[in-house]
Length: 77
Image (cartoon, rainbow, N blue to C red; front, side):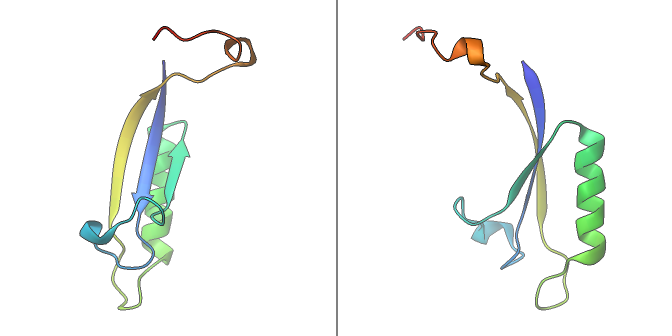
């Protein structure tokens, strides 16, 4: 199991309730520190049309990454 640190943020509306799974950016990081550095950078330089900071949400996901050896393994269903 590998942890992925995700950062979602809105570039259009700046309000979490208006986020859209198809248009809301998500970035993945290998460490929580890298994700925080990216969020800090975005908060320092990116604002919406009204000059307000965008909304951000952070998540941590436990992921199983497929390898070349896993491609031909039949899943247990």
